[in-house]
Image (cartoon, rainbow, N blue to C red):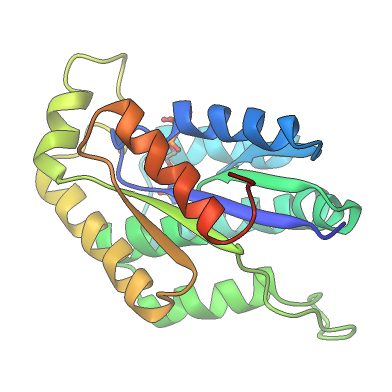
Length: 216
Ligand code: TYD
Protein backbone atom coordinates (compact mmCIF):
# COMPACT_ATOMS: atom_id res chain seq x y z
CA UNK A 1 0.00 0.00 0.00
CA UNK A 2 1.27 3.44 -0.90
CA UNK A 3 2.02 6.03 1.76
CA UNK A 4 -0.01 9.21 1.86
CA UNK A 5 1.33 12.52 3.15
CA UNK A 6 -1.19 15.13 4.31
CA UNK A 7 -0.27 18.46 5.91
CA UNK A 8 -2.55 20.91 7.72
CA UNK A 9 -2.02 24.64 7.57
CA UNK A 10 -3.58 27.95 8.50
CA UNK A 11 -3.02 30.96 10.70
CA UNK A 12 -3.10 30.53 14.49
CA UNK A 13 -6.72 30.19 15.63
CA UNK A 14 -7.91 28.57 12.39
CA UNK A 15 -8.87 25.41 14.33
CA UNK A 16 -6.88 22.60 12.70
CA UNK A 17 -6.35 20.33 15.68
CA UNK A 18 -9.79 18.76 16.20
CA UNK A 19 -10.06 17.96 12.51
CA UNK A 20 -6.68 16.24 12.41
CA UNK A 21 -7.84 13.86 15.15
CA UNK A 22 -11.12 13.14 13.36
CA UNK A 23 -9.27 12.40 10.14
CA UNK A 24 -6.88 10.09 11.92
CA UNK A 25 -9.83 8.04 13.19
CA UNK A 26 -11.42 8.01 9.72
CA UNK A 27 -8.25 6.56 8.14
CA UNK A 28 -7.84 4.02 10.95
CA UNK A 29 -11.45 2.93 10.44
CA UNK A 30 -10.42 2.09 6.88
CA UNK A 31 -7.62 -0.11 8.14
CA UNK A 32 -4.79 2.36 7.48
CA UNK A 33 -1.92 2.85 9.89
CA UNK A 34 -1.64 6.55 10.75
CA UNK A 35 1.47 8.48 11.81
CA UNK A 36 0.27 11.62 13.56
CA UNK A 37 2.93 14.27 13.88
CA UNK A 38 3.59 18.02 13.90
CA UNK A 39 6.03 20.77 13.03
CA UNK A 40 8.13 22.26 14.33
CA UNK A 41 8.65 18.98 16.17
CA UNK A 42 7.94 15.30 15.68
CA UNK A 43 11.33 14.04 16.95
CA UNK A 44 13.09 14.67 20.30
CA UNK A 45 15.58 17.04 18.65
CA UNK A 46 12.93 18.87 16.63
CA UNK A 47 10.75 19.27 19.74
CA UNK A 48 13.69 20.98 21.47
CA UNK A 49 14.06 23.30 18.49
CA UNK A 50 10.30 23.98 18.64
CA UNK A 51 10.63 25.27 22.20
CA UNK A 52 13.32 27.71 21.11
CA UNK A 53 11.46 28.90 18.02
CA UNK A 54 8.18 29.43 19.86
CA UNK A 55 9.66 31.11 22.94
CA UNK A 56 12.96 32.87 22.25
CA UNK A 57 13.21 36.15 20.35
CA UNK A 58 15.55 35.78 17.33
CA UNK A 59 16.08 37.29 13.91
CA UNK A 60 14.10 35.94 10.97
CA UNK A 61 17.02 34.09 9.37
CA UNK A 62 17.86 32.26 12.61
CA UNK A 63 14.22 31.29 12.89
CA UNK A 64 14.10 30.04 9.29
CA UNK A 65 17.27 27.98 9.78
CA UNK A 66 15.92 26.43 12.98
CA UNK A 67 12.52 25.46 11.54
CA UNK A 68 14.24 23.87 8.54
CA UNK A 69 16.79 22.12 10.78
CA UNK A 70 13.90 20.69 12.79
CA UNK A 71 12.20 19.68 9.53
CA UNK A 72 15.30 17.90 8.25
CA UNK A 73 15.45 15.71 11.34
CA UNK A 74 11.71 15.06 11.16
CA UNK A 75 11.75 14.16 7.45
CA UNK A 76 14.69 11.77 7.86
CA UNK A 77 13.64 10.14 11.13
CA UNK A 78 9.87 10.02 10.86
CA UNK A 79 8.16 11.14 7.64
CA UNK A 80 10.13 9.29 4.94
CA UNK A 81 10.27 6.01 6.93
CA UNK A 82 6.51 6.20 7.62
CA UNK A 83 5.72 6.79 3.95
CA UNK A 84 8.00 3.87 3.00
CA UNK A 85 5.94 1.64 5.33
CA UNK A 86 2.75 2.77 3.59
CA UNK A 87 1.42 4.86 6.48
CA UNK A 88 -0.91 7.80 6.22
CA UNK A 89 1.18 10.67 7.61
CA UNK A 90 -0.91 13.48 9.10
CA UNK A 91 1.39 16.41 9.80
CA UNK A 92 0.18 19.48 11.70
CA UNK A 93 2.05 22.11 9.60
CA UNK A 94 4.93 21.57 7.17
CA UNK A 95 7.06 23.83 4.97
CA UNK A 96 4.20 26.07 3.78
CA UNK A 97 4.22 27.38 7.38
CA UNK A 98 7.83 28.51 6.96
CA UNK A 99 6.92 30.45 3.81
CA UNK A 100 3.85 31.93 5.51
CA UNK A 101 5.39 32.77 8.92
CA UNK A 102 9.12 33.33 8.31
CA UNK A 103 8.64 34.52 4.72
CA UNK A 104 5.44 36.55 4.51
CA UNK A 105 5.07 37.19 8.26
CA UNK A 106 8.62 38.05 9.25
CA UNK A 107 9.86 39.16 5.84
CA UNK A 108 12.59 36.56 5.31
CA UNK A 109 13.69 36.10 1.69
CA UNK A 110 11.29 33.81 -0.24
CA UNK A 111 13.98 32.49 -2.59
CA UNK A 112 16.24 31.54 0.30
CA UNK A 113 13.33 29.60 1.76
CA UNK A 114 12.96 27.80 -1.57
CA UNK A 115 16.65 26.89 -1.41
CA UNK A 116 16.28 25.57 2.14
CA UNK A 117 13.22 23.61 1.07
CA UNK A 118 15.11 22.02 -1.81
CA UNK A 119 17.95 21.00 0.51
CA UNK A 120 15.85 19.73 3.37
CA UNK A 121 13.12 17.98 1.40
CA UNK A 122 15.42 16.83 -1.39
CA UNK A 123 18.20 14.28 -1.26
CA UNK A 124 21.09 13.95 1.17
CA UNK A 125 23.48 16.79 1.87
CA UNK A 126 26.17 15.41 -0.45
CA UNK A 127 23.74 15.36 -3.35
CA UNK A 128 24.22 11.63 -3.87
CA UNK A 129 21.24 9.29 -4.10
CA UNK A 130 19.04 12.27 -4.85
CA UNK A 131 15.48 11.78 -3.78
CA UNK A 132 12.66 13.73 -5.30
CA UNK A 133 11.51 16.82 -3.43
CA UNK A 134 9.22 15.66 -0.67
CA UNK A 135 5.92 17.55 -0.63
CA UNK A 136 2.58 16.61 0.88
CA UNK A 137 0.17 14.79 -1.44
CA UNK A 138 -2.39 17.28 -0.26
CA UNK A 139 -2.30 20.30 2.04
CA UNK A 140 -5.50 21.02 3.91
CA UNK A 141 -5.50 24.80 4.26
CA UNK A 142 -7.87 26.16 6.92
CA UNK A 143 -8.54 29.62 5.56
CA UNK A 144 -9.98 32.08 8.06
CA UNK A 145 -10.10 35.91 8.10
CA UNK A 146 -7.37 37.17 10.48
CA UNK A 147 -9.94 39.21 12.46
CA UNK A 148 -11.95 36.06 13.21
CA UNK A 149 -8.80 34.15 14.19
CA UNK A 150 -7.77 37.00 16.50
CA UNK A 151 -11.10 36.94 18.30
CA UNK A 152 -10.88 33.13 18.68
CA UNK A 153 -7.37 33.41 20.14
CA UNK A 154 -8.26 36.20 22.56
CA UNK A 155 -8.49 34.84 26.08
CA UNK A 156 -7.44 31.32 25.13
CA UNK A 157 -4.40 29.97 27.06
CA UNK A 158 -1.03 31.73 27.40
CA UNK A 159 0.00 32.83 23.90
CA UNK A 160 3.39 31.81 22.44
CA UNK A 161 5.63 34.14 20.42
CA UNK A 162 3.50 33.92 17.28
CA UNK A 163 0.07 33.79 18.91
CA UNK A 164 0.79 37.11 20.64
CA UNK A 165 1.44 38.87 17.32
CA UNK A 166 -1.00 41.57 16.17
CA UNK A 167 -3.71 40.89 13.61
CA UNK A 168 -1.65 42.66 10.89
CA UNK A 169 1.02 39.94 11.23
CA UNK A 170 -1.58 37.24 10.56
CA UNK A 171 -2.89 39.15 7.56
CA UNK A 172 0.64 38.88 6.13
CA UNK A 173 0.87 35.18 7.06
CA UNK A 174 -2.48 34.54 5.35
CA UNK A 175 -1.09 36.26 2.26
CA UNK A 176 1.87 33.89 2.37
CA UNK A 177 -0.42 30.86 2.36
CA UNK A 178 -2.37 32.30 -0.57
CA UNK A 179 0.89 32.78 -2.49
CA UNK A 180 1.94 29.18 -1.84
CA UNK A 181 -1.46 27.96 -2.97
CA UNK A 182 -1.19 29.93 -6.20
CA UNK A 183 2.17 28.31 -6.94
CA UNK A 184 0.81 24.76 -6.39
CA UNK A 185 -3.00 24.93 -6.71
CA UNK A 186 -3.44 21.19 -7.28
CA UNK A 187 -1.73 20.36 -3.98
CA UNK A 188 -3.92 22.64 -1.85
CA UNK A 189 -7.43 21.93 -0.60
CA UNK A 190 -8.72 25.26 0.65
CA UNK A 191 -11.24 24.86 3.45
CA UNK A 192 -13.50 27.70 4.54
CA UNK A 193 -12.72 27.62 8.27
CA UNK A 194 -15.20 30.40 9.04
CA UNK A 195 -18.07 27.94 9.60
CA UNK A 196 -19.33 25.64 12.34
CA UNK A 197 -16.91 22.81 13.27
CA UNK A 198 -19.33 20.31 11.69
CA UNK A 199 -19.37 22.16 8.38
CA UNK A 200 -15.58 22.45 8.41
CA UNK A 201 -15.21 18.72 9.13
CA UNK A 202 -17.55 17.93 6.26
CA UNK A 203 -15.41 19.99 3.85
CA UNK A 204 -12.22 18.30 5.05
CA UNK A 205 -13.65 14.80 4.59
CA UNK A 206 -15.08 15.75 1.20
CA UNK A 207 -11.70 17.04 -0.01
CA UNK A 208 -10.19 13.62 0.72
CA UNK A 209 -13.09 11.69 -0.80
CA UNK A 210 -12.81 13.81 -3.94
CA UNK A 211 -9.22 12.64 -4.26
CA UNK A 212 -10.24 9.01 -3.72
CA UNK A 213 -8.34 8.69 -0.44
CA UNK A 214 -11.32 8.19 1.84
CA UNK A 215 -14.24 6.00 0.90
CA UNK A 216 -17.65 7.71 1.06
P1 TYD B 1 0.68 25.44 16.16
O1 TYD B 1 0.84 24.53 15.02
O2 TYD B 1 -0.41 26.46 16.07
O3 TYD B 1 0.58 24.53 17.43
P2 TYD B 1 -0.32 24.75 18.71
O4 TYD B 1 -1.70 24.46 18.20
O5 TYD B 1 0.23 23.76 19.65
O6 TYD B 1 -0.12 26.18 19.12
O7 TYD B 1 2.01 26.26 16.54
C1 TYD B 1 3.12 26.24 15.82
C2 TYD B 1 3.59 27.66 15.60
O8 TYD B 1 4.82 27.64 14.90
C3 TYD B 1 2.63 28.48 14.77
O9 TYD B 1 2.50 29.77 15.33
C4 TYD B 1 3.33 28.62 13.45
C5 TYD B 1 4.78 28.49 13.79
N1 TYD B 1 5.61 27.91 12.70
C6 TYD B 1 6.52 28.71 12.04
O10 TYD B 1 6.64 29.91 12.34
N2 TYD B 1 7.29 28.18 11.05
C7 TYD B 1 7.20 26.88 10.68
O11 TYD B 1 7.91 26.42 9.76
C8 TYD B 1 6.25 26.05 11.38
C9 TYD B 1 6.12 24.59 11.02
C10 TYD B 1 5.47 26.61 12.38
